[in-house]
Image (tube, rainbow, N blue to C red; front, top):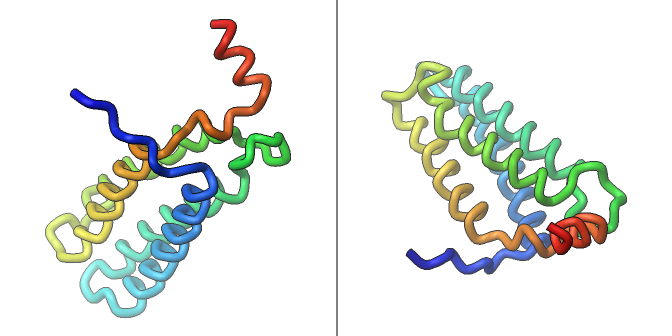
Length: 135
């Protein structure tokens, strides 16, 4: 099995995070306003996911310079947790049989691809690089 090429830099990942945040928050508003049956549930699920991505984006040190508290490698773990919530949200919030559930499944699938294709080592802080070399 071949490794997935690491085509996404930390800066590109940051741009994608902002796009994902905007997508979830917009979807949350639209689902709540026009979602029909269980629209409010889907809207809340989208707003929770969008808020998670927004929080991680604001706190992540994409440049590796230590100005923000979350390392890029920690951001990866948060991404995996958030995509897991996105994938399971239709079941958790009770709208898994509705068309709007595919928004969450599609988002989770795209996030899996982004996580797999991101170069997580590119933004390692100097102390992390030294520790990794020593190990």
